[in-house]
Length: 301
Image 1: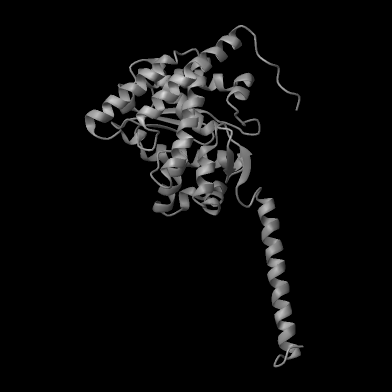
Image 2: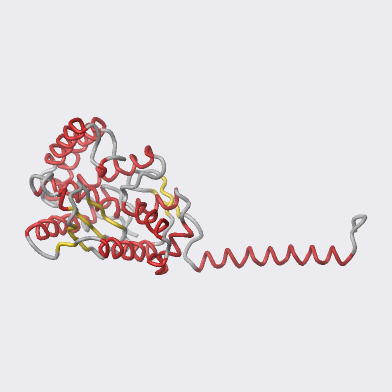
């Protein structure tokens, strides 16, 4: 026994250490029961390490809740040619994402995930679109005149759907250290959170947020460009129109001095156009091989 310490104080200290250890064990067990206490690691579609905050079940739950919050506050078009156009193009993109050889080609990991696809058009003049986790797509009416044909709309929708397929929202939550907040929200509590936390969380889920490191966001945006180009090509759309669209967006940015909010955290115009030019022949070659039945069989699991 150290000088100046009584047996009682040593016992109390020992009991405190024991309680702390029991609390730590309980915390770790609770995390296991919650299907993860922090980010899970996997290789993302860009062949880089990807830290994810959410399990597949949590990702779906959070996407559904966030979508309901967005729709509740928006003017949703229930029918009409704009709605039909968005839903037709979106469904073709989603069907392409189910092609297993394409998933291997662009390194998607979605086998354990469930997507409840839903497509809505929101009456809003802004040039914007997004896809929340779990397959919840929203397109603003302001985007539709900008996309002059269905091929260009497919380029945008392929890009936004790619964010959900690549689990980019879960990765952003891990990076922003919002794991605990996200898990609480995924448990059905998003609607009960204070407005600022709710706004921040939905912003991270919807991909257009200004929070965090833009270079990191641009890596995700480049991945979504790459995935989206392959998706639109396999869906039967002309991938050349993706290049036309982004070139027109570059001209729009130059005329107005800044890009639309939708493009504010995307790669630079020059980088994006150069990348798409490089990927175009790859996407066409992959689609041609698929059409001709020249694809490698899936590996045995």
